[in-house]
Image (cartoon, rainbow, N blue to C red; front, side, top):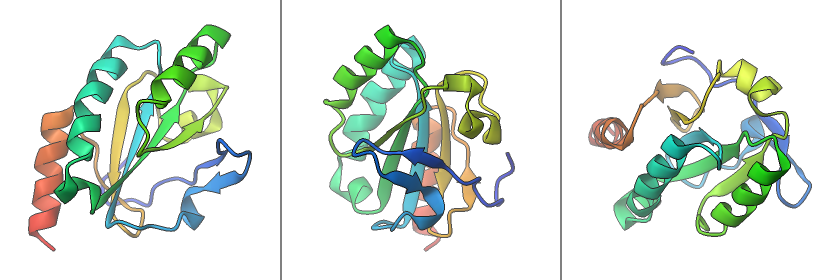
Amino acid sequence: MHVKSKAPEISIKDEEGNLFALSAYALKTDYILLFFWSADCGHCAELTDKIYPWSQQTKVNEKLSIIAISLDDTNLDIIAWEQKKKELTEWKHLHDTEGVRSKVAGDYYILATPVMFLLDKDKKIIAQPLNLDELEKNYRKFLNNE
């Protein structure tokens, strides 16, 4: 996935059973963080526990929307995801039951989680941070260039 390229379409049913399409997502913020994760992934849990409080800061929350895409594919993992997402109330939650074998995982070249993509308002990829430090650095860089 190349920085400055258009983010591949995401077409998944949301929690209400409606089809979510990234291309039709009405942006209320200037940036989107696509966060691919799994509830059974230790690195994902660690990253989620760092990103969530950071994302709740007013200066971040006003400019950044987070779309958390679960790639959990076993019943136990899906139950764990259902529980964890209750703690992450400000995020948009999507779930692809095919996990890393799903079309969306293939389109984003995801073989393991967690994976993040920072998108601008045109839904172009502007960064692929590996951790919270890189996410904060990229986020500040783009805010300062506005």
